[in-house]
Length: 274
Image (cartoon, rainbow, N blue to C red; front, side, top):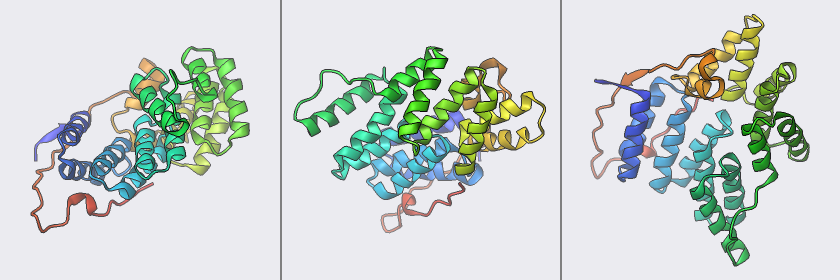
């Protein structure tokens, strides 16, 4: 087999989905997961292939797996919204699209999709989407208004304690605001519930590496399992990343289409590792 980087492989799978070759896309994603069984992007891409192929139940499971490791995964939230919309669960579709909008409130496509969903519910489309408190808190975080971000996230979590995405965002805000002890305690709480939450592992690994704690290696190993090329670490830490970005190559699957009487590859079981 020839070798290909994970980044190139992701682009290849995305092209397969775009061109309607869903079985091939699913086969490639499952091939990657056989090598890197916790790789978040492969779960999300597999979810997209399954979604486009009409395999909603399986797609939903893949998106949920992606979100269990990355509660801020924009495309997984969008995918879940589309599934609920197709099933006629309009309120659930809106709720999931709102989570995507909070992550990227300047994304015109996300805003348009949310406007359409709200228009179907209310009978008239809003001219523009009002920022939710979660979206506003994330804008504070992105704009380095860190004390305001911390305060707003804390208020939201008090009202919605089940929202892991808000807790992950608060952990980052605390870390950026130099409140490292509080950030580490929150990360430990998140990891008690979701041991393979990528950002919590990255933040705790960084904090404990800085203080020389041996346990940091555990969290950084988990982060590498979830994101072997360390792209998320680069996005979070920049040039000071404790996990420098790298290219990782894997064998390229020699895909052979199934015959007409054979079970499509997306129908096969995916061994879930977290």
